[in-house]
Length: 280
Image 1 (cartoon, rainbow, N blue to C red):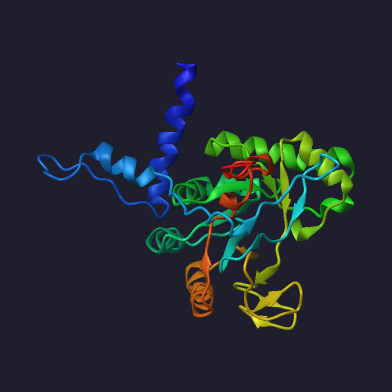
Image 2: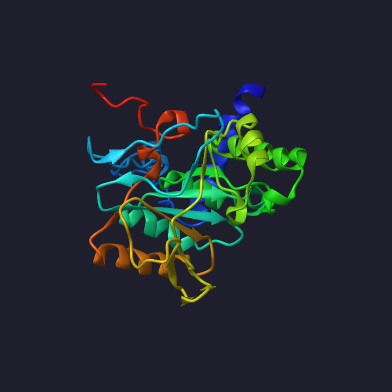
């Protein structure tokens, strides 16, 4: 019986995730002629598959010479793609899950694991809308101010919680506030982290950014608009669905499209791409 518990727990979480807002509601209808409940549930739980980059259109990020997780803030690519990443998880918008499914937009979630306790079903729904769950610590501290043992606990405990809840151990880490040091990289490796992901631009959704106002957009290099390979930072905040529609409009108006950043990362850095391109 003990061996069956995780499966039961995952199915229960899946059903609750639908109620949390964002999964198709599966109802059994006696004598109905439509798809079976099992078929409908399988469709509801199926992961999204995102397009992979065109051969020769990008430069694969590399491992660090020191053997520690490299720090990334963009992807070198000629494609007009940007990568949408969303942090934290202290509030949620049920409409957002439906929007992600409808628009078929790849995102990457950096989850602060303390929020699993209150919103675990919601992020299960996000996971099955296609968002991989990566590590954003347990309680969102400034990592560079913490001693090594505290940093390690923040990363390892968060990975443990996310793996137990969502069935996959995080391999990419985002330090809160973008604050880290060499100790962070060392303990992150000990926790199974393969790369550290920062960002090249931020959408201050639901809040005000310095010099850009409410719902403003700012590049780290001081430029304007999007650039190929941008990693864009957002946050789970109230009204996220409307804010997401806003940034999707900007992206498309400038001739870009969202892409799945994990498909541009080699497996050695926690992504889905082979470490050596075909033919090498």
